[in-house]
Length: 257
Length: 252
Image (cartoon, one colour):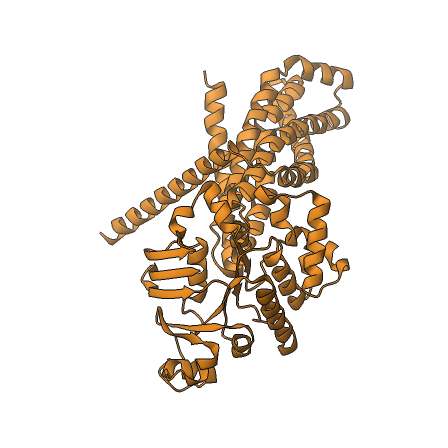
């Protein structure tokens, strides 16, 4: 009986948390549509989330593309299908690995920093100070970050796709003895615009989720260093799990037959 | 004039305010004293609408604060206030002058950037800081300087009412004296209504026209600062003399 009660409490707690995050998401969208809009904060967030995430997303994509080429070559060799390496690397990067790994890297880098920054602002009364200065914290802190991440992550995914495919190309040509021109032609022949487009749509959804979780957990941070630490951890965990769940749903939506 | 009538606020089972009745006359400096955790900050936040009381009425010049909780009304209401927070609550990502001119750079009171910067530097001078400080970030300042910047921000948009939350906490006695003098000068010079919360008795005597003591969720005593020493209230007496023995339990 006690175990059932504990399970019930856990379920109710989880549902309440989902409800609170949902209300926060709708409030964010509501504020997005109503002025004022803080362009300076949007520009800063775009740089922080987009431009400064390029190295980590680029390196992740590069090494993943290279490893993917080696794996597909080894797997393809079992039934004499080594020639599929360029097309599978390109499709795999564009549809799945580019957006998912890019999203996860951005979640680690951005959700944590947003949650820590806003959480610290909350515990040092900077959020209260914003209110007393007639500035809505959601408009000033949440909307610019969420919009910047929703626009920046698809672009990061696009760049990551290109770097990942290049990683596969370098490994394919230098380690697996592919002809460079044939590798590129094979890639271009099989990669469809929707392969890249679907990955970028996923990137937009992942960017929205990452910034939303960072802001939500930051705004709801507990007191002191421990509270901010917990908020930061919760933001990264929630963003990562939501990215993987959303990826499955979007893949079902886009590619299930 | 700020009027609080039967204001109640609880956080879970903790009933912090249990029926506050208090009037702060226009142009007067009211200091609220009381031990840590007695709800002094909550009281200020209720007036500002940062915390919503469960019961009671708060009026500013006859206008119910509850009616100004959203939209343009709220902005106009808050534009009448300035607040110095306990830890100054300066925005880390902005320079000192951008902090001071925050309200002047956005919203209904928005000014051209150069004009806002000039006003910010003027306010920094008013609180005894040199113009060179304007382009530093808050993290580059000492605690006392941060408090002064917070004070400059509180007065930047010429508010009618200023709240000071523990203005001297964490400062050395000399810097505390400087901040107390500044607050008194500014309150007199601008003719504002001021509400200060503190447990620093030197601050009380330097800043206050009137004093109220908050204890057990209620205003225990209220009167002119000159009457403080002869209040005849054992709680006030214990508090202002800092005695461990008395009706206020030392472990709360």
